[in-house]
Image (tube, rainbow, N blue to C red; front, side, top):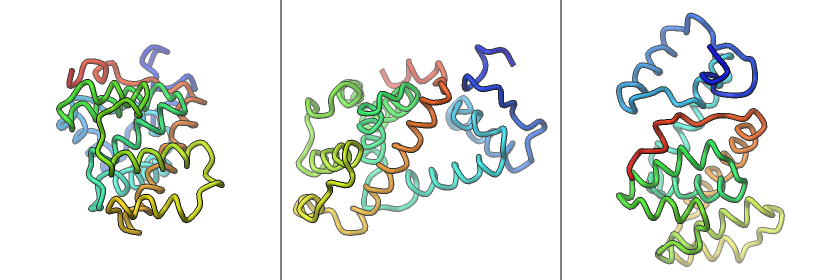
Length: 190
């Protein structure tokens, strides 16, 4: 693998051969997405770490929730914009464009979520995500109440906080390792 092929700036070769379960997961990614996302390739140097990452990602982003898939992706982009995470802005910006059917929405969230035409629920959710990303220790009951007032349940608030926390962690790892987004993301849903 050349530096240009590497998912990060670190020299952490992928386990070879991949365990059958991991290979099946990667094959499913290729079938559904046309590629193996570089974040998965980056973690594939340690299958236990890859499994932990994918289990948490799949639970937070795909499991049943009061948050839609689009709302979870909107959180990912908003947090990643604040953190200036190139990998996640590219990958999750593409997901917002695809799920919303609105290329402009994805771009607005990447640049400044406050310029996007959002409903009160989405605006409150992203305001909370921004607050949690910038100064989580300053969150008080009135911030949670603002979410309740637009229809979020306490379970939904847990899910919002969990998605925000996950992307703050992921952004830091991606930035620290110079994780590189797959080129395919740049042209998707435009």
